Figure 1 (cartoon, helix red, strand yellow):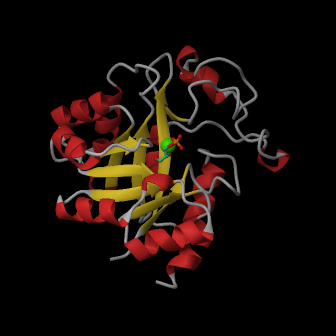
Figure 2 (figure 1 turned 45 degrees about the vertical axis):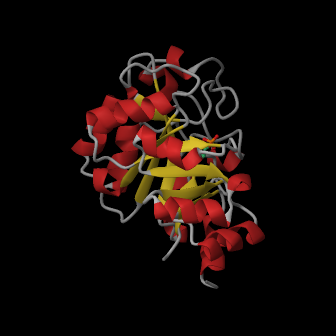
Figure 3 (figure 1 turned 90 degrees about the vertical axis):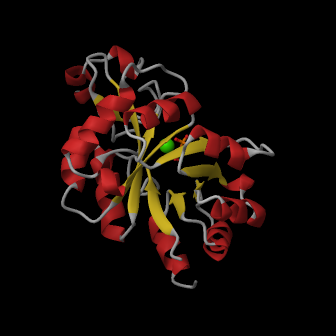
Length: 242
Ligand code: G3P
Ligand code: CA
């Protein structure tokens, strides 16, 4: 089985995370898919940014939820990374999906709702995925178990992933009970036993954020369903060996 390579926030070692340059580079490198993070602006527009606060990755300050879409669009999301990327913006989910539509990329859309409560985030994102006809190549992920339950209520067939960095003895039963179809674990939680348990329980297992050669090699050897990496080029090179 081929382990799929998802570019984490795009090719985020090469270009500012969660911007079109990072997505474009990941696509050019040949990544199988893209992982990105969704939050809602004050006027309810889903936008792609990792942190709840815009400070780290833009020239602005304050919370995403306090900006309208028009205001957040004016921020520079590139210069913090390198002046070469001056003028890159925070993309809306709609723009991203338009860009993805005619490309053979899989999607891992993380709903960033474990810290903020974004009303109707699940249904807003779901409707957009349906409208762009990309649902069949998407997994919706979240660290928030309640969000997974809300997604399942909207459409019980949609692939969902529970994200976790916590070691728990009964992780597989928890994820099954939740109704998620996959688990996305931090690399340090990866064991052969967990991979076996997931396979036996028909759960996909993907691992984040895998950037080192030896770690990538271990994921390919254990045949995890996917890895999420900042360095898709390195991952693709490494995967050829397996
Ligand atoms: O989807 C895996 C990974 O992105 C989760 O952690 O903090 O990078 O969003 P974070
Ligand atoms: Ca993420």
